[in-house]
Image (cartoon, rainbow, N blue to C red; front, top):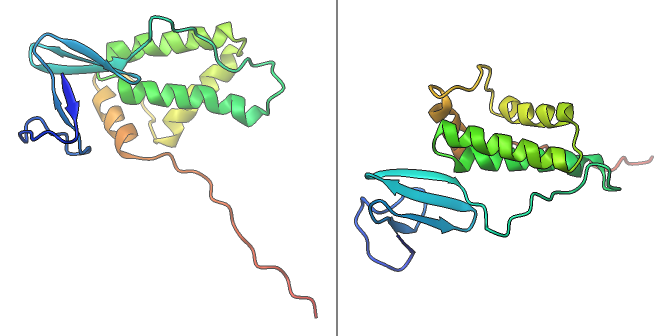
Length: 160
């Protein structure tokens, strides 16, 4: 597979969302940063890439860090897995893998489920996630940014 920004490529090889060209040899797989890409019979599959030296270590739940940092870890990791996995089956495997890693770092199961459900709330997903509606969920998460609260700046009061 070739990922390059300075190589001329066909429109078939160009991703419209990125200036990069990609060309994946048939029946080959590659890893690029955190993404595992695979071409199976001209069908492009993606999933999360785990390095061979991968350790399932995240910030321990009982650390001294503020709660908002601990809340953001499951949320962000779950969102990243939904964006990286192209099939429902790989998403389920990655979700379970993440849940187990968080449990090993002493995160309560109720806390994990709340943070995972928060991802669905952010993207207005009401129905349970199935293999049928998973492609729609991928579109929602990849095309939309998570809306952050913005700080409101108030003018100082004038004293008379």
